[in-house]
Length: 287
Image (tube, rainbow, N blue to C red; front, top):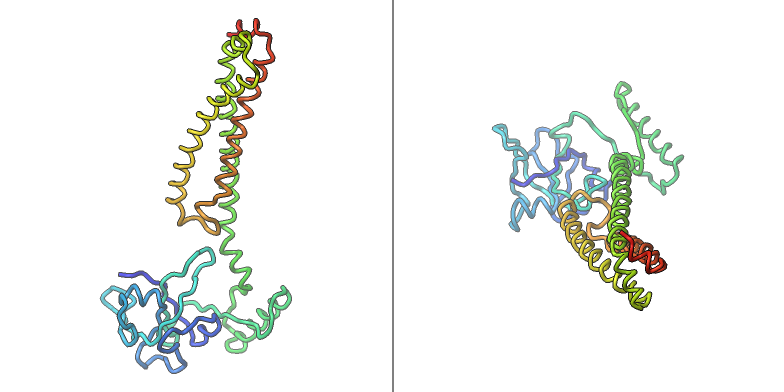
């Protein structure tokens, strides 16, 4: 059975959130207890639940237990993003709060004019608190926040996780650079005697650097190709957990690859240059 988010709302919710009506009608003030139970579903839920068939007028049960509470679909609306970190909407259906009630209520306000400054938001929230107190003085308002602050609080955990993962990635990249430098430097140093022999036999500096560079290019190229393939596969695996960035970020992949290639080139050049400048007799005796 399709999973969907259940929302208990008042009739004014759709206008406040600027949700588009696709067909049928919104919930109305007349949809109260004692009248036929009705609901509004979004286009994603209508598509997946009825598979292209007409949804208006159909009766659905939001639960699958024995006490099924049926409601009639009276409207289909556009899909909305439910959580701030989601890249796409989820299936949602809306029921009239006056018919089903709710254990807790969130009141949403939209300013009549432009509300952009902290002062204007605070005044709007204060007006909302006064409105609640005027209706029921004993009804507590647990918290009042602007929508931007609500989004930031929702993403706070993701930001902390992003910082931690960035630090881990920086450490891993540093270790990779040190590892590449150590391996490449050791590999070239092992060929010091060979380099000295070639120089004694009249080899040019460019020829020796080209020879060592080819070996470094093959080793580094094979490692980068394998690493990119594995990294791309893992990125696809965890793409659903990535928010705000692409799992196939060209600049991220290319910059890391170029950095590792640069480290490999430097680690090859420094010991090779040292061996070339060494006296051929000393180079031949190098262990």
